Length: 67
Image (cartoon, rainbow, N blue to C red):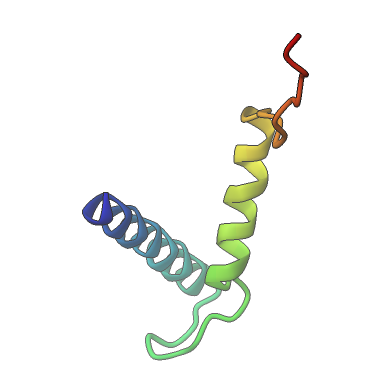
């Protein structure tokens, strides 16, 4: 499980790196420039919001009394 989580984290980071490289290329930024327009936190927020659209699980447990 831990290895799976590390793999997912590595994959997310690589997606972020690829996206910031594309932003840098399109804005003609220097190779050493920091691209602050797409933070990792913002990327994760976007992904979380997209997942919420598809995962409509209720976050509650029904407490029915047993008769």
